[in-house]
Image (tube, rainbow, N blue to C red; front, top):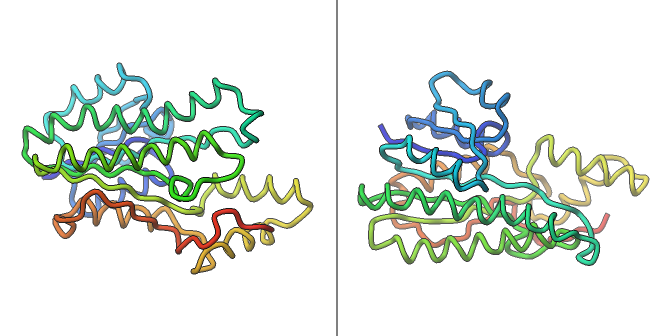
Length: 248
């Protein structure tokens, strides 16, 4: 049975990824800092408490693995929303640490396992902010751009060992986090939640947000033999973003 590890896999996009790989017949491992969410995972998954930005935690996690077929480096945080001059260095560093350094650490420890096997797949969750940038989100956008550069390099370094690496760039994803954004923006602008949603959706060709399952479906495809020659790619699952900064 093939094994997948999903970081930040106990909820949100990561949980959807884990469920997708489970349905595809994988042995599912999920790592997360949220112990309550880990406790709520299906009993046949292996859940491990792990801070993706802490090397000791990541090393201890991988020490438990005797093999790994697919890594979904999915851990990330939103970071601050502010003009660049108003962002504290500590806020910048925390955002970059979890997003970019978390992906680096996961890849660092996955690579030797996959090299030994002569095969493997590394899929990094970036963002359309890593393609276009995003106003008032400089740490997040910088980290997500960096994750694309990391993946491109991994694809070149690891390809000779039969290991593929790709990036998925979600757009606005339906769920509690985005609902919070919509509600806060609606309150700040004296608008309704639906008006703000429509403004964001208007920035895409499909005029809608994506779902966590949409992201998970792409991750499962990339982890499958059907994608055996897909590597070094930046794949946006976003309904085609036309305008990364919609005005509402």
